[in-house]
Length: 152
Image (tube, rainbow, N blue to C red; front, side, top):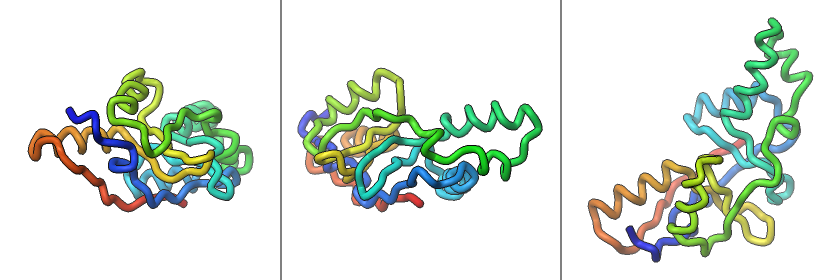
């Protein structure tokens, strides 16, 4: 696998993010409709955290076991309460090898890409599989995702 590929070539660069005031039901609906599993959380493009489907499942499991409605969960929590803070991120020049090493630890399945704390993209485990498949079929070279971003 090429060690010349960088985060900039792999990342989804048109990232629209959640904000800390978003409600769990909004994030759940977004995950469901867009078929994604993680969403960066930012304010004025500054990365504050990331919310994953696992973060939501933890809250829903805890709350729904007590026969609580989604409306009550929305009243009790915001994305700011649920998100993972102190997120590991890399810059656009991080190599494929560096990203694989970080994600290979198995702690998370997406890496926000930042410059001076501002979110400029995101790389997920799906992106890494896509790069592997591309290289397998095309050989080493100039890979570019060109993928659109998602967010609310």
